[in-house]
Amino acid sequence: MSGQMVKTRAVLLLLTMVGLAVMLPARAAPAPGLAPMFTLEGLSRGAVSLAAYKGSPVILLFWAPW
Image (cartoon, rainbow, N blue to C red; front, side, top):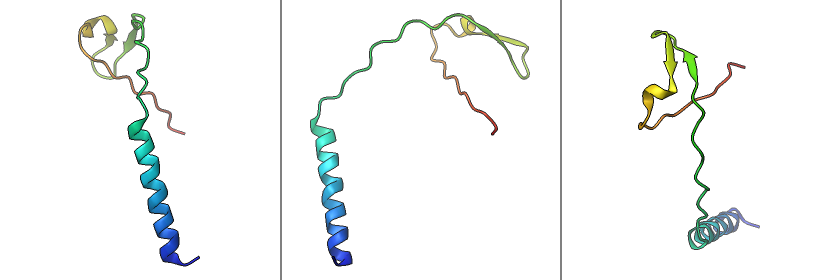
Protein backbone atom coordinates (compact mmCIF):
# COMPACT_ATOMS: atom_id res chain seq x y z
CA MET A 1 0.00 0.00 0.00
CA SER A 2 1.14 3.52 -0.63
CA GLY A 3 1.79 5.97 2.18
CA GLN A 4 -1.18 8.11 1.16
CA MET A 5 -3.55 5.11 1.33
CA VAL A 6 -2.30 4.20 4.80
CA LYS A 7 -2.87 7.76 6.02
CA THR A 8 -6.35 7.81 4.48
CA ARG A 9 -7.30 4.54 6.20
CA ALA A 10 -5.93 5.77 9.52
CA VAL A 11 -7.97 8.98 9.30
CA LEU A 12 -11.12 7.06 8.36
CA LEU A 13 -10.60 4.66 11.27
CA LEU A 14 -10.09 7.57 13.66
CA LEU A 15 -13.22 9.35 12.41
CA THR A 16 -15.23 6.12 12.76
CA MET A 17 -14.05 5.64 16.34
CA VAL A 18 -14.86 9.24 17.26
CA GLY A 19 -18.29 8.94 15.63
CA LEU A 20 -19.08 5.77 17.56
CA ALA A 21 -17.93 7.33 20.82
CA VAL A 22 -20.22 10.31 20.26
CA MET A 23 -23.24 8.17 19.34
CA LEU A 24 -22.96 5.69 22.21
CA PRO A 25 -24.77 6.78 25.35
CA ALA A 26 -22.49 7.85 28.17
CA ARG A 27 -22.88 5.81 31.30
CA ALA A 28 -22.76 7.85 34.45
CA ALA A 29 -20.66 6.44 37.24
CA PRO A 30 -22.59 5.66 40.38
CA ALA A 31 -22.44 8.38 42.98
CA PRO A 32 -19.70 7.59 45.46
CA GLY A 33 -20.32 7.52 49.17
CA LEU A 34 -18.84 9.97 51.58
CA ALA A 35 -15.13 9.80 52.18
CA PRO A 36 -14.10 8.62 55.63
CA MET A 37 -12.85 11.37 57.93
CA PHE A 38 -9.08 11.39 58.30
CA THR A 39 -6.25 13.63 59.42
CA LEU A 40 -2.84 13.87 57.75
CA GLU A 41 0.38 15.53 58.76
CA GLY A 42 0.81 18.59 56.53
CA LEU A 43 4.11 19.83 55.18
CA SER A 44 3.92 23.32 56.67
CA ARG A 45 0.69 23.64 58.67
CA GLY A 46 0.83 20.70 61.04
CA ALA A 47 -2.15 18.33 60.98
CA VAL A 48 -4.72 18.75 58.19
CA SER A 49 -8.20 17.26 58.62
CA LEU A 50 -10.69 16.44 55.88
CA ALA A 51 -13.43 17.87 58.11
CA ALA A 52 -11.88 21.34 57.68
CA TYR A 53 -12.81 21.22 53.98
CA LYS A 54 -16.42 20.10 54.41
CA GLY A 55 -18.56 21.45 51.57
CA SER A 56 -15.57 22.15 49.32
CA PRO A 57 -14.19 19.93 46.56
CA VAL A 58 -11.04 18.08 47.60
CA ILE A 59 -8.60 16.48 45.18
CA LEU A 60 -6.12 13.96 46.55
CA LEU A 61 -3.02 13.26 44.48
CA PHE A 62 -1.19 10.01 45.13
CA TRP A 63 2.24 9.59 43.61
CA ALA A 64 5.45 7.71 44.16
CA PRO A 65 8.99 8.85 43.37
CA TRP A 66 10.07 5.61 41.71
